[in-house]
Image 1 (tube, rainbow, N blue to C red):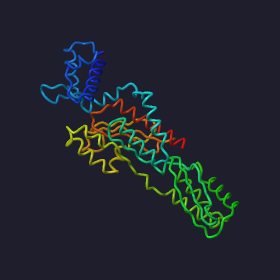
Image 2: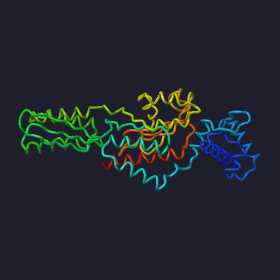
Image 3: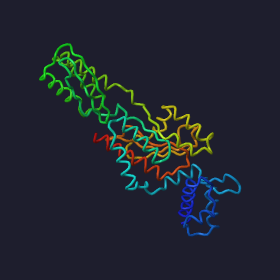
Image 4: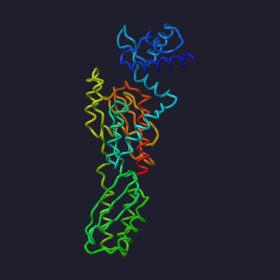
Length: 337
């Protein structure tokens, strides 16, 4: 009973501190929350939570604020992730459903996450090496010029033009298209490239097959987007000007380094599971005043990660819900695209 009551006190202090940005005293808890105990009992609980490292007292006469350990207990004891409202789900769907291609999906996701959470949003482009080939289209622009369209499970589309040494008839084009799709469709990128390479080794491989396969394998090995990160909502950090030197300046510097951001998101590689790292739990000591909430997204296994980065004083339940909801919608869009 005592443990549950103290957890309720901690939960109330976290909620009030996030909302007011001021240390929370026992009087405020009595006035704002129905804890059904006396102010003296609350003061004793606060003192016990402080002794156990869950709360800190910035000044002698001030109230308490949560520590990283306190935030961690608060997050770990959330029974469920707060569900998004019908209005929020409708807003997410209408905003993301209008995306026209992968770039648009990624940039819309960043803007949406930043708006929903009022934090800095980070979205990693889908990793090419984990994607599969959905379809290869080969279109004759002229009898000696082909357009290759490579469509991947990530929603990524690669186009290449191929110049042929001699004209290709309609029947030859249809046969080439069939062979290429039979070899590559449904295969992970690496396996698809290997299967296409085998077509070139066949005794009956002609110049057109070699040219098309070379172009497709080149497109599949193009890793330009494998470590691309898009960031949005940096202006939201202006809300935390009171702690600029300790938390905001290091975070602004980190946002300029793609490698740092990839490492911050690094643990979120399985779809559906949220990763919440608070303060010093992160990989960088200079970001000890920062929390990261991230998850993987993608139609099958997680293809990449998205999430938010911000000061430890944040609305964890609401932010976790927003990150999970956006990831699910992005996964659905990529799956249906």
